[in-house]
Image: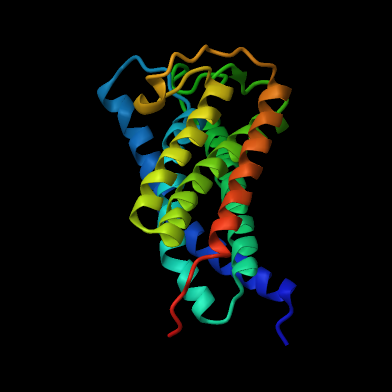
Length: 238
């Protein structure tokens, strides 16, 4: 008999393993590019973790879109409740974010140990004003939470499209753009997205604890919005 807990576990496991396979290939590509760059530029100041952070934000946004398009209807049509799919998918995405950070940290450490060039891997990584040489738990949490937020932004776009159609997609692209821009603003003190950057936004200089709390609230808000949208999406039976 499938209990809700068993169903959530199955969805979590399936989605995590599928997306982790994609992620392994993605990380290999990023690593290859990272190793090739010094062959063309003699003086560089790169770190694998900071490289991963920048590219992984876009990667998580894209697979958030792909996963929700590919799997939501499939699971619901096969008897999985919307609530169980939402829970399993959210847990899988959070696990994916933490796994990327963990694997990237191991790779970064190995590169630091075996790399013969001192300027190839600097001693610290900065995400905005966050110094990665500080207590290790904070950088791990911040990296994972931020890329998880980008995954949710992609998921939110598709949830809006599935619920309201084309205009919903457009509306929730703007909402998602706002959410990721706010995360950038909280941690990097700048907005990277032209549409939002048209506003005259002051650059904050917030304590890490405040930025962390605000990010958690923002992620929780996006999750609640996704849940509200997906529980009302009409799915055609097979």
